[in-house]
Length: 286
Image (cartoon, rainbow, N blue to C red; front, side, top):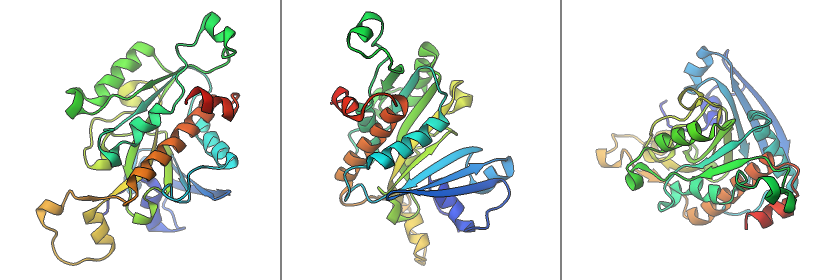
């Protein structure tokens, strides 16, 4: 059955426990969060999963529309997973992809708003404020092509060429196959991302191949497209053309986006600044 999903975990679900060669899966539980780690180890696995080779970490958690915060244990676990995908040192460019004026697509920019930018805190200022141990971080929300007339990938590539970061973290809204996963999962991957794919507006890819540095993607599924939804419920008949690109999102999408954006920014801040107390991170980003 054909379906659309940005989640590697949903692609792997079709095989159950009998995964084909080239695809590996591990699972663990931390508090209320189930963490699935899928590794695509060769081109055969990549073709079957329809995902590039790499690591895909999916944290399944209670709905963001109902639960406001990750526990410290859960936050630390997710930050640890993100750290494993990043180089240990060097500047990190954090990018919030999407359109902040369209609620289901506003996740990236809102998450970027909560990430602590530190590249400018240097020298005597850093020493005087006790922030001389911070990892350098730059934060960017490039908007979308319809707002700027410039592809997000073009802006990010220019910034990467200028700043020469050790890695890029790209945060964006994703699409799910299962409506029960909307606002209930965080996916992190080291294989890059195509901006806008979650809202059926796929743009130029961001990856090591296009930017010259590792690209780690982070996202939360916020939409499901109607053809996928109907196919999984075995609805018969041909879908009218005007409904082919229709997307569905939960009624509580505003609250879901607000809380999931905060969760992503907390995970990024904890991963990039592990020695800064959470209280100080909250103060610095308020």
